[in-house]
Amino acid sequence: AKEDGGNGYRFFTSEMNTLASDRLEMESGLRRALARGEFEVYYQPKLNLADGCITGAEALLRWRHPQRGLVSPGEFIPILEETGLIEQVGSWVLKTVCTQIRSWQEADSLPPLVIAVNLSGRQLQRSNLAATIADILEETGMDPRFLELEVTESVLMHDPQCAVDILMQIRNKGILHIDVDDFGTGYSSLSYLKQFPIDCLKLDKSFVDGLPHDEDDIAISQAVIAMAHSLRLTVIAEGVEKEEQLAFLRDNGCDIIQGYIISPPVPAHAFARLVQARANS
Ligand code: C2E
Ligand code: CA
Ligand code: CA
Ligand code: CA
Image (cartoon, rainbow, N blue to C red; front, side):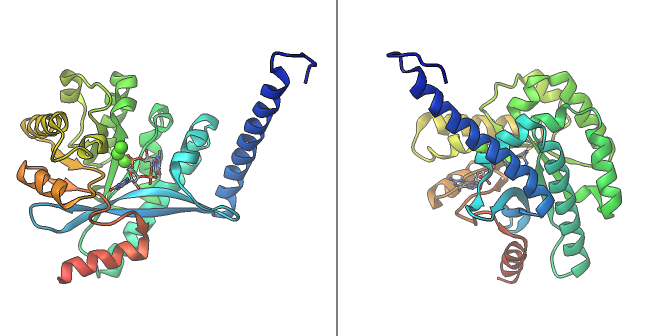
């Protein structure tokens, strides 16, 4: 670093170097993770409020780091996005989930389950996403009706026309369940909402948090549920932690909930046990 007395330049530089080297280490760690099989998929149940059954799950990526243990996606998804590694990792998640669904179906001990995979903005920008998904479905012999996709509202609204096109292509491959994730945080216009080939809105956790006391969160949740239903869309509430939130959502016509009150995301075998326990109770 340059000698530059008095203005803190040297201090700042060494701090930046630390951040930069942390990041580089993370980046090379992530490249190795894919090759060494350090990624895992966890499953968080989705509970249908009408009949109390688990209808499926959301697949959530985890990194089992050899030294640091389980690393959560908030820490590394942004780096996967920036480096473009998300495309390979995203395909790995899709393949892993499709293979898992197949094996649950073949075991014949579980009811049919629909499993949702998160798509990143970068994946959606690739014009060949629908073809990639179709290849994975064919390779794994998966029935596309059991695969669900989640795309955040802000990713959809980044280039709505492009999103409509790609989602249409995906739907034409037989995928019927497409959810708008983190709904309410991304300023969709109603006219686009109508055009997107979607069938479900996921009410963002930030609105669920304030239920059933915060008046704004009550108004927003009720408005989202009413609007979704009038557009014939299903509503999922995410991040439900308390009994009183669940009661509010049930009383107000929400269709499906997800959250720690049912279960945190868990490994595949634990999820299967959970589904069986619920079905037998
Ligand atoms: P998301 O799609 O909004 O997923 C919901 C997040 O909320 C998950 O965090 C989940 O573990 C957490 N959660 C669920 N229920 C509760 C609850 O009751 N209370 C609280 N406090 N949290 C709850 P997670 O697994 O850390 O994932 C964070 C984000 O990383 C996800 O947000 C998603 O945007 C992204 N992500 C995870 N897996 C993938 C993936 O395979 N591909 C892509 N592109 N993104 C992923
Ligand atoms: Ca999601
Ligand atoms: Ca979400
Ligand atoms: Ca969220």
